[in-house]
Image 1: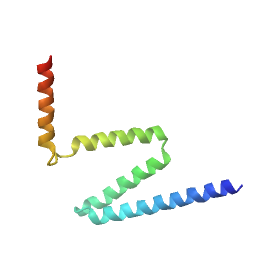
Image 2: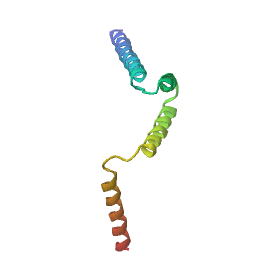
Image 3: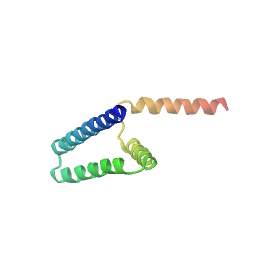
Image 4: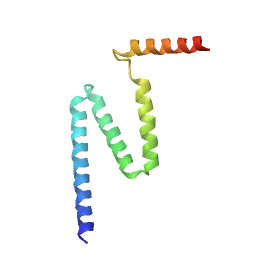
Length: 100
């Protein structure tokens, strides 16, 4: 009985922390999005993503995370590390060609 009560209290604390983090993220979006007309759409998209993560099956959430990570990876502009990384990739490819 005590174990079940502690489990319920623990889950309640976790959900409270997650709720506070979500409220913090929504407030941050409201303040940090510089284009005024994009603030509300960004908040709505974020809240829909959180709601989906809470209500959707685990496999669907993992698939959504993978798609969003791939989209972020492909759409992120190059950083200051991009040219050396591209150069290393080019050198590795040419080394692979020479080894054949």
